[in-house]
Amino acid sequence: MSDNTYTPPEVWVWEQASGGQFANINRPIAGPTHDKELPVGKHPFQLHSLATPNGVKVTVMFEELLEAGVSDAEYDAWLINIGEGDQFSSGFVEVNPNSKIPALLDNSGDEPVRIFESGAILLHLAEKFGKFLPSDPAKRPEMLSWLFWQMGSAPYLGGGFGHFYAYAPEKWEYPINRFAMETKRQLDVLDRQLAENRFIIGDEYTIADMAIWSWYGQLALGRQYNAGTFLDVESYTNVQRWAKEIDARPAVQRGRMVNRAFGDLDMQLRERHDASDFATKTQDKLEADS
Image (cartoon, helix red, strand yellow):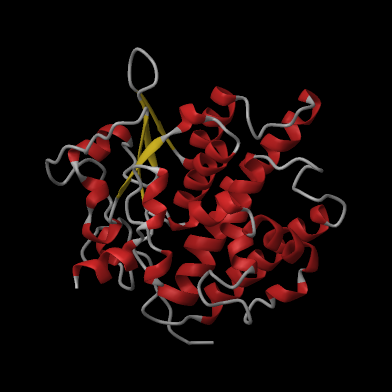
């Protein structure tokens, strides 16, 4: 372990970028940096997002609703490029004052309703359409407990382990060990729960599965931080079984693609305005333009 030490100042002052990938999106103040209105499409739901795990939760939910025959869940999905600061536009801040993706405008009623925070969006849509909630009301507290478990736990995986293992400008033993230990503990929590349940709360697939899979399922499938071997994700056999079953769902496969602007071009659908958009992905459009 390094002998370097850091003595915090009496009063912290923001004097330089935090360093590492995504450093340019971090700042100690809120509010917009520039004026720009958000685009508006033809559907009742206007989603502004990016296919990070938090964004994937919501696009999977929309695609699952449509797969289940809920035609009123049609949506427009607009790309928010967080690397370029789209989340700090005046229009985006009006929908989400926290300047984080995803952000949703529900225009299906008399007045537009804004919803931000991915868990809140999932719950809003589930309650609105009566889908992907437990059929037994007695199981609702259990589902909510796991939904909020994900909301509270994932920052240790993403901002903790993911940042220090994959994105920090320097590799430090202490934070990597600390957050790797916590991530593996969380995987063990899930593995024990899934040892006795097909899905998170039993035999029913719910928004808790969508939320948790987007982070921990994709981690188990080797899609997060290139850390599958380091964390020995294959050893969590119950998580593996659950992650693969959900990954095979057609709606999940589509949801993963929406607002994706990185990785394999064939998996990118940067904007989604109609189901037919999946037939002309980013790769196809680039080939057509060449």
